[in-house]
Length: 232
Image 1 (cartoon, helix red, strand yellow):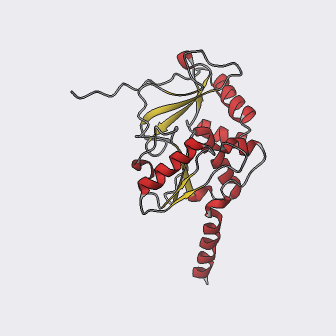
Image 2: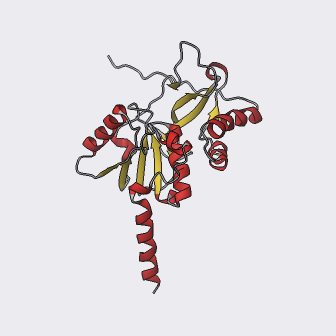
């Protein structure tokens, strides 16, 4: 007997746009110390909003297969209140019916390099770092929501893949899974600088060049030299 997939439950958002933005800003900028201009841009383009009703207290990150105009395939949720969530709900969650292997939170449009992270907040953190390092135009970043979103479709069509998971046993396991399933295709593995567990912790501690070990900057310099050589 074929089991039908459960229907995706779309978390409602706060109807008052000012309150919606205030809650997103309060958590991602105020608590997570992410750049306000980066967060405001993602909010404006629908990459994040504040949950309402049943999902009140959560920041919501829609998942899509590719591009902002693709259909939503699921949602990651992160508790954003100072008090703990209700006892029957976790701090990190996904909306009921989410098809995690069909879509992800994706930042960037380049097909050159894909960076895979565990969480949307780490994805935004690395995106902010890529902007500051001047390499954001050369990459895309996707959040796997832990093991749930990992699959070969995730990196299909990308020239290079960077596994950027947490500095713990689970993160090491995810990185090894990616390496094994990519086979002969090379995978660069990076971890947050010690002693920090995840990328946002490192960012809040003052680290701003989180992607320097990926060689993205060196590739950009090489491309600039190639362009100058053609112009001569």
